Length: 282
Image 1 (tube, rainbow, N blue to C red):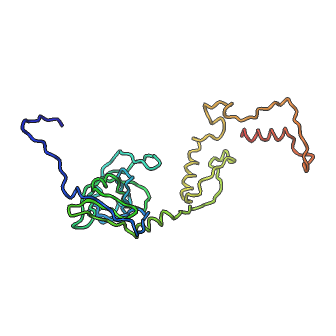
Image 2: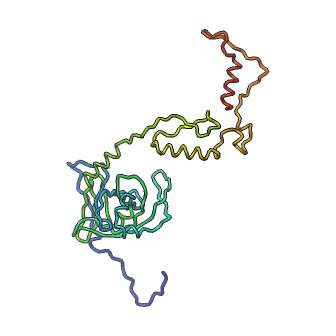
């Protein structure tokens, strides 16, 4: 904003309160057991006690998962608004959140507590956590997380407050991360969705449930016209590209060498070549 500066007016210097200038320090690791578990804390969000909050300094956005969002009061959930901001994962694959909601977050307990409004993006995904506090929330609270200490410290008007990681929740999360999920296998074998070409079969992934496999098969069978079942179905593709053939001179007679143990009436060299060509062509 541009405004006219009046003569004799003094510029107000921006000063920080004393408690905002406190130095955050962590104890020495000497004679201690450093931790490599995630720092999972508990906080009050929208006047509800929420556990399983993962403090992730690598996350740009603050995330709330759907299984936690649905447990909020109805009046709070109605304040969620649509958003068009994409979320990018570690694989640089963008996904879209279901919406954003501004909630009050209270860290710590009286008198060593802080309250601030944090904008969360609601995501539909399976996670062992309820909420992820990213860099935005850390900056708002002036919080510093130490994984090796298993704690988070942040500034309050009283003094430096310390939150310790939930030991039980951390152990549960580590166990979930180390547990491999065994897929549900339904070995039904290959199936043919097109009765006109029964020799052309497909195999549906074994990681799907039986009901899901049946639904997928019905979808494929109802839309067989969108697939190419023969060369003539591939419109716009020249035959010399779609057809496979062997570059060989048929005027040269084949030379067949008898091998030990080979039957006298075995297939000739030319027959073998023609059989290979037929397999590649179809």
